[in-house]
Length: 151
Image 1 (cartoon, rainbow, N blue to C red):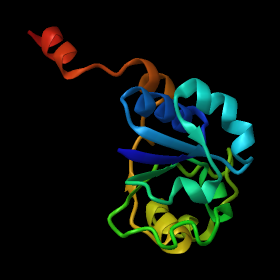
Image 2: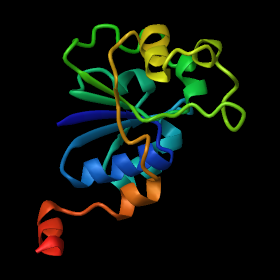
Image 3: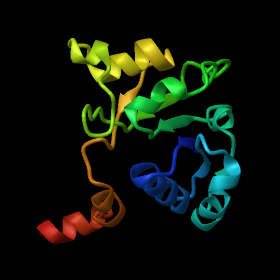
């Protein structure tokens, strides 16, 4: 599968490593540009690209950036990207800790709706936002391991 991942922080970086190791073609991007990620990408078995390339010709695009940074993504990020491309959002809204208050969310709009309707203009699947990066990186088990544990 061809997967684009926008950002290589705790969750995004873990997904880059895990998905590359599983044999997927992974492109990774960040606002700092591909040069800032090249060493990490090479080590993880991925390819560092500009942000817009992480969405082009992919089957899945994972947006793994803080909510406050979603509006900073290129406005044409999904221009020409087919509707059947799955877009995953791993972020959480942390007002007062990391994020400035976002008025629409503060007044009751679910954060995923805000991401879709106001920012990306695409349906999103909210995934990996309720797991700690450590658990994602270290606690995953193949199905056979779980069967052995419960037998």
